[in-house]
Length: 219
Length: 135
Image 1 (cartoon, chains in turn red, orange):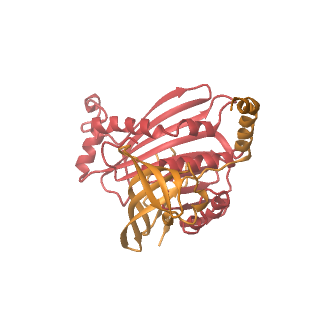
Image 2 (tube, chains in turn brown, cyan; image 1 turned 180 degrees about the vertical axis):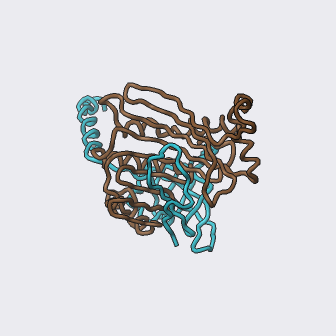
Image 3 (cartoon, one colour; image 1 turned 45 degrees about the vertical axis):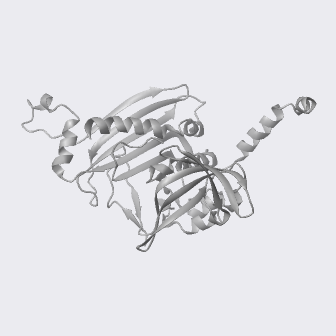
């Protein structure tokens, strides 16, 4: 597996489905009944919280699951567990295929923290040429950047979206997000969420390489 | 004690502005890891398993004999030759008490009727008569 050029303060690998879900159904025991979690593992999940019709969320030592009526997310806060996220996502997609929209997203969320706000500001300001704005602002400061690239296949329309912006979380000081979202939406009746996930099971490497290009140049 | 944090310590999500909920689970207990090996079971003995492991960062390969007792009750039914597993080395935190720890976790995948049908279809395509004649 590729390694990030710079150590993040937090890293997330996430697969996100959209569709129609009954959140309260997706408690750990449901996953154990489908053999996707062990029985003891399901009993020892942390933070099982259910709000009827609203959300269900829990975590094991390796993955976290968040279900809302229109969104189903499986993630790990350690990139090394990307294979477990893939296994769970492919399995969930097979079991819930009739509940899923023809859309899936493979996301990477990185946080990079700096000692001072000045260092953070410097990173953000490197992202664009400030000179081009100097006629408009006296002292411009970049607050964030979003950029995307579209791609297409016989089966899907894809979008790679990059977002870089400061983190406002209270527990993270002087931190910037680097989010990479890979969206896949149906482009033909052949579209299958499962085959997209299987095809892109190792896309973690190309996404880390992509992130490294940004980190080397700007961070 | 774990808690579900709603709209606190959360990152605004720039590509989901319409989303009204986001959650994060914080916990003082659990297992964290820095090292992972991807393994395949080569042989199962009475009290050990022989496996081939690949370190996830360096891709260094090694063969390792692991005690069978390391396989959790949850995963014992998944143990078979050729089964894939991950071996993690890290720390367990039990209410603030931190200890070195390692965990074996077998890979799990749902098998649904469609998969079984695919396997049966593949089997149908094999000409067993020809194979038998050959041997």
